[in-house]
Amino acid sequence: MTFQAYHRARRMGLALEQLRRGDDPLAVGFDHGFESASGFRDAFERTFGSTPGRCKDVTCIKVTRIESPVGPLVAGATDEGICLLEFADRRALEKQMATLRRRIAGAVVPGTNWHLDDLTAQLAEYFEGRRTEFGVKLVAPGSDFQCRVWSKLMEIPFGTTWSYERLAREIGRPGAQRAVGRANGDNRIAILIPCHRVVRNDGSLCGYGGGLWRKQFLLDLEHNVAAQRTRSSRPMAI
Image 1 (cartoon, rainbow, N blue to C red):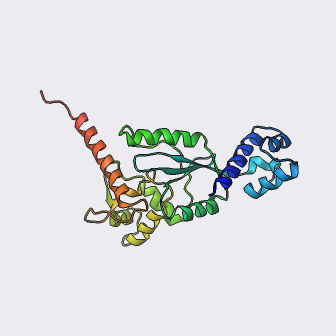
Image 2: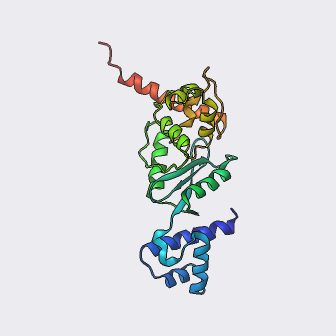
Image 3: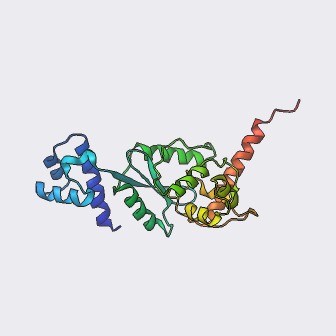
């Protein structure tokens, strides 16, 4: 996205918020630099596929950037919950965004909401070793098979790993390791849906869109936190 396109999208996202608060459409258009009601209406329709008068029916995906020890993350959320968490330099990010827009049928605009603010705080706690589970609501539309895989991924305990073979068995599809691997790669919500916890049978790493070094970082982080908590929970010898 160019600098100009970013600001156009940001401007429309702010306009949508004002309209949903009940502000007058004409005044909102003037506030954001439009010289006529028709110009604002046309721009709004191009962005959201709906008129300002039907703003409450618009599905909007707010997207923001979150800094982390593994590099910048791109996070997105609708009013219902988190629908995107990806590494900013992932090569498949553009494809993931296109799939997300198709699945949710919403416009993507820069901005934030309370889901994203909550996610930012929880990720900070995760990377500091103070959180082992996330409490944000997820919106992860996909095929039936993908949703089964993603749901099962969230059952892998913090600090442990499963093999692709085991994951396939757990969803009732023994022998479907390759299909499971593809579903892992299609996961749009990294870390929260922990596809990094899936490894080869011999424990070696493979198949992570953010890069194997990030996968190793996340696994090491979780292993160390889990080990430390285990040690601290042991009764002291008398």
